[in-house]
Length: 287
Image 1 (cartoon, helix red, strand yellow):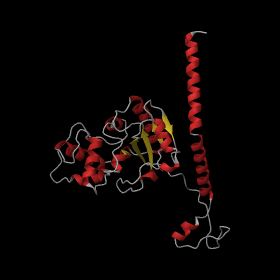
Image 2 (spheres, rainbow, N blue to C red; image 1 turned 45 degrees about the vertical axis):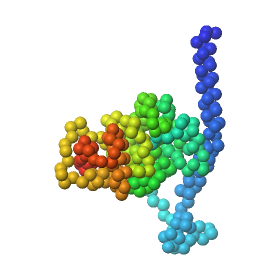
Image 3 (tube, rainbow, N blue to C red; image 1 turned 180 degrees about the vertical axis):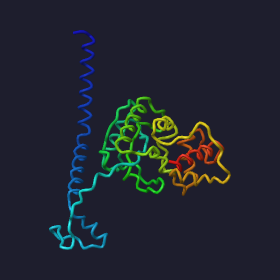
Image 4 (cartoon, helix red, strand yellow; image 1 turned 180 degrees about the horizontal axis):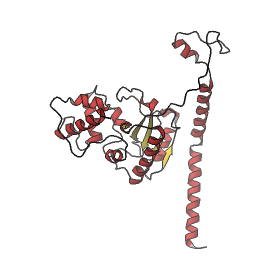
């Protein structure tokens, strides 16, 4: 047998063993996932609201048999699954993809995402797109205060300090293109965790290539030629129009700069940063 055949057989065997080990490692979490999905399916199939929901609406709870003479179920034929309308990008802030996978498959951590992309560009899907992951936490974007319910969470395997790899970004762009088409997600609704949780989160960090994403239609970016804003322009109003929570003004400014002006690390407005903000404000108000 030629050496190349031996090497080929070795690598195929190594890949197969690695894949089997990975499946075995997460077999328990996959079983829990399937069980929870089955439980959700059973809830959806129930025609009557739960006793807790009935009580919250001021209605008497259903009887033991789940039927009431003054409450009748008539199934509408006009409905569909709720769909995501935002994509929120994160970095894992952990040391390896295996560490992150373990974190997301332990019930006690209470955190999750829909996708993870490792440094080699491999995409892991952890949750059906229509299900609600626990990734955004306490955040706000515009008038939306429950971002988990209407967003997809994508975690990039990155410790928050290193540059992102080319395979990661290439495959991220492919994934984003699929999600945007599948769910008709607006261009401006591709944002970062640090954008929706200023002062609490900073991911995906100052190294993230937001401009490159925007050039492909994922997120807003400013024009090459900028005009100074009028003297009447209020920067906090501009931030609010974009979606930032400005209750902590300093945190909102830093979050904006981390996304659009990563070379600036202070909360003071510079003419350049103000011109960028005004340019984006105009874009957002003319969408």
